[in-house]
Length: 512
Image (cartoon, rainbow, N blue to C red; front, side):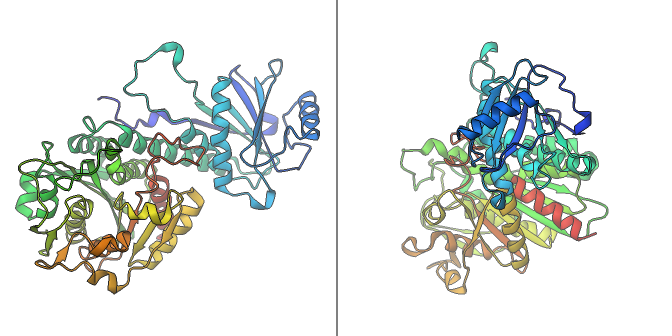
């Protein structure tokens, strides 16, 4: 397929204007006016007096309340704008970025229904509103995956391609514009990750991921270099844990490495994403129900590649190594079987009791190789690793574990701002003992399904040495989210892209 590229020219156009500079230039426009719960009249410097009176009357009748997750569209064809959308933000003292992001996601359906292409967001009376969250909510909320559907010109959705932010005279337009541009880029990158994950597994192969990585490096000039290790090179290096998983599949495995360097960098961070482009479970075959969803078992890889795309465009002053072990896990006469023992890249032997616990095997070799070759100050892995995390946390948060307390705390705080929430689980030594093998150094599953998310992390810890390390298990948040307005439940979520990129930007600022 030729639509895999995350094209930077698809980014939403952002304008920032002062109130006296506002000019509604086309007919496909909508004026968005925020409203707090039960705080009326509306605060807008550009709303016509006639529309203000109509909206106030509706507020008096409680048709418009300003409650979170509510919005009201008023057609206004005779004005400079086509219509007015009152965006409910809820209570003033509860305002946060996620509130705005979800309000924008709710508004997307109204923008589409009224064929709005250009949104004017009037925050001239809302200096405290995180405008960048509105940009993210719109861009994430209007994402559509239709790569396999017949294109019908009259059925193409109307998308918002331009957002003009109206600010008060005493607000710094350059600062607002810069934050909104970053938000537009990050939502584009997150949608790119969603596109990778939503693509059918017969098209989204390890080779496809490798090609995407090469394209990311190509657009970054000499600041980012892509290296792809094939089966022969990995075999020579002794990556038997990774190659064991790939034995049953026809698709050749790849170890994909993107190496971004900045001349002023003070530290190096490695990101590793699980890239099982289809997971049947191997010989330990999964049940047939919902097996089609196992194309999503590469959401960690998608997040890493999309983060690298964002990093190469934002260019933060930090070195970032993006690593993706990419395989398929299939049953075959050559496939790895329960009871097999493999020697990993770092020399540890692993008893494979369940071939459906494959993600930790490919990450083991990838991370051991990364810490030895690139010597990062911190390594973070992200993976749809365990069903146990869905039982523990549902779809509301991903699990975070590891040895780098500072990085874990920073990521949790960043996730609160980006709406990608994380919950820390313990990683005591007792859990590591549970992963000791009977006939090998390690076993790839714990006993009796106890603490499945934690024991999986305890296994991975054996492959990072003394390097500070963080593990994210996103099996519950990677796709199918039902209660987030800007993430349609039938799609992947792109979890991790905005989280990682903003965290890396913060680290770069700290290093200056």
